Length: 390
Image (cartoon, rainbow, N blue to C red; front, side, top):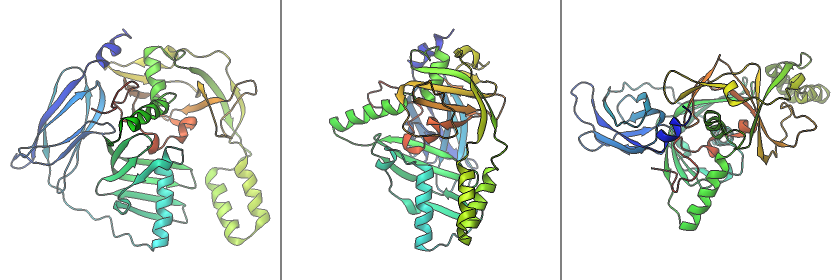
């Protein structure tokens, strides 16, 4: 049964249809139609027709967007048979979120934080540039250490590390200094950047480096039963929150309070609290888990459920970690391999044969927590693709 995904993944299909107005059913031209977080995208012809070709099997979010109309989204599970869609767009009632007024200094400060949390700080991130930054609307709350952002048009980022031009529609974005949590919701579509043959060879190699050891690589290895061959070791981690460490929001509030008050001793006291590990009584089971112990096939072909008790500890033995994660347990007798810890916020998570999470995505700590938009590959990418796009 596990051989079936490999057979279907080698095949592709076509998604076609027509975009019309909901009232008169007249075709609408120049509508952007794409599969979110993939490189499958096009514009409708004058009569509203469109076609996406060479689509690999998997679950996608199809998006149709145009000025003056409400954005259309639909989750589709693509197999090997052609998909036909007729899309009606509703006229958009303009809703103003309010005018955001800030000084140039405030805007620059907010933008630098946005870039750090949205794009990342890795080597890939250093080669990424947003070409239209003033498309981003931002508002900050210094008391809550919160930054929120959104866009009414595509934000365009050129990723010179991986060779993609990525267009983002951000519905919501927030990053909190109190919880150290960054969240965003929106759509993205990838385009291949132009480059010489030598440049494309470099991009191809960098894409493969980014893919191997990633969470997508891990999930695809799970359902194919190739975790060991691909360098992954899975174990169960037991740990408890240290009751002697205050909650993160209190630590951040105290740090800000005593920094502004200039009380150095109190400030240093809370710095020490911040540097305390979050967990204690940590224990890693010696016996590795087998793939079948943490995932199972769902009743929908091509969709899988990830479930595990406590915390899932994933080791990637083909690369060493360069970042020191104080809250990720590391046995003294274990080599410093890349390591990630997964925590489920629901009974299970759902992913597809492209290794993409679609429901109940777990929280990642360690290596995978570093991944930001600068590390994002199209969902249809697979190592060995000559172009990486279709």
